[in-house]
Image 1: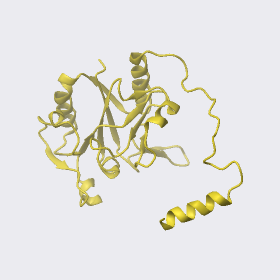
Image 2: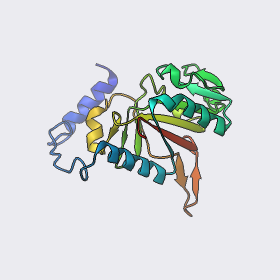
Image 3: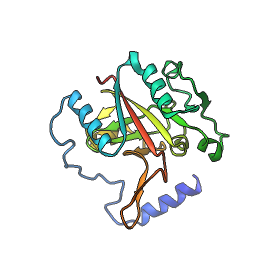
Length: 210
């Protein structure tokens, strides 16, 4: 048993009943309203747009050309690609492709123009993209440091209606990153500043939704 496990076990023993690991009734609504898969994708797109993400729809035949166009419009000269991303997605990409490496420093990642990843899933009701560090997503830091993130979501397979529907599908031991639009914050005068703790520009490609 590690020191962490020992400390957590002592905390659990010290907590009064009911303890956090006891059964908790979850009788709230799992989803708000009935929607078809197409309507769920439309809701996701609408909420992402509300959060100032740029949403694109494409089928499998057009994904390569779309990614090439988005990177060209951005003027990206380098693009970071996680190892599990389908090779044909970026096969025609002109910028220099950089691979996700553990040895990369924050300064090196900051110099990357764009990053292209997949996702674990997306939540329609909240307009949220969830990353879990899978092979098509790479390490968490590659989506937090570069200024431009293109995230591909497979529709309808990776889209769920709500947070309660999403949680059972996710592994809580993985490094989960929940993204609702580009990184943004506001000061006391409510002046919005983007790109403080993540990419300034988020583009979401709904793959399979036309």
